Amino acid sequence: MAKDLNRVMMIGRLGTEPEMRYTATGTATASFRLAVNRRSRVQEGQEPREETDWFTVVTWQKL
Image (cartoon, rainbow, N blue to C red; front, side, top):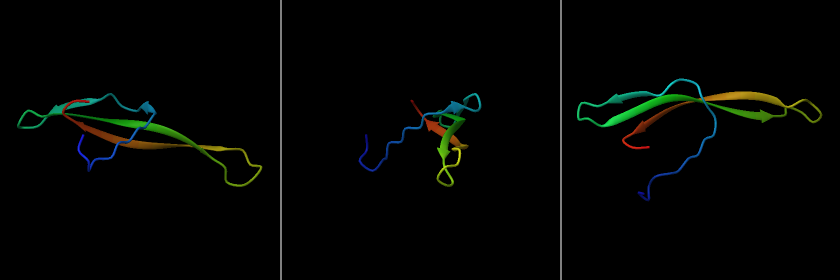
C-alpha cells in the first residue's frame, strides 16, 4: 500500500445496491450509499439521541 494513503473502516448498512460501471479504458468502479448510526446525548440525564449519517462510497478496481 502507498505511504500517502489513509485507511478508513466504516461499519453500517447498505442504503442502495452497489452500481457497477466501467471507464472508457475498462477500469471497474462501483458506487453505493452506506448508513452509519451514532448516538449522542445533548445534556446530562436526557435520553440518548440516535442519528444516521449517510456516506456515498466509490471504489476503483478491486475491493
